[in-house]
Amino acid sequence: MAIGNWGTDVVFSVSDRRVLTFNDMNHSVGSSWATHSRIGLKDQVEYLRPTLQKLTFTMELNASFGVRPRAVLDMLERHTEQGHVFPFVVGGRRVGRYRWRITDLSEAWETIYNRGELYRAKVNVTMEEYV
Image (cartoon, rainbow, N blue to C red):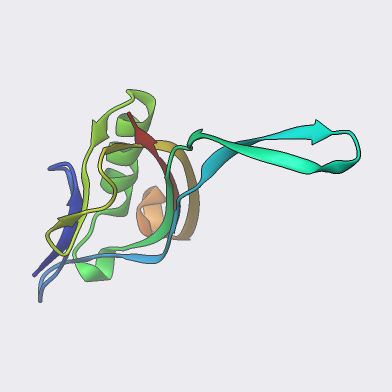
């Protein structure tokens, strides 16, 4: 069953053959303000603009769940370095109004088998809105 996706390469899903999900997703939305000092009075603030939204989440890549960790990491690295942007969808609904780009990947190679086969890894993904 599909949970969501980022483009067509990263499909978050759970089935009896494959589990690729994310955990601990944080979505931050903010705005930018200017502060004007006034003599003898409290500072006055002025709204300037919304800031770019950010997403962070963790993915566990585990070969016992039907995922090839090294292939997924290579694909995520390629999308990051080539600057690809896609909508981020969870439960059939887009997160935010715009597309998202990966700005940072942090990988932890947890289990490596004979001949360097990566069996289990965790990756922390940081995304930012692309306007």
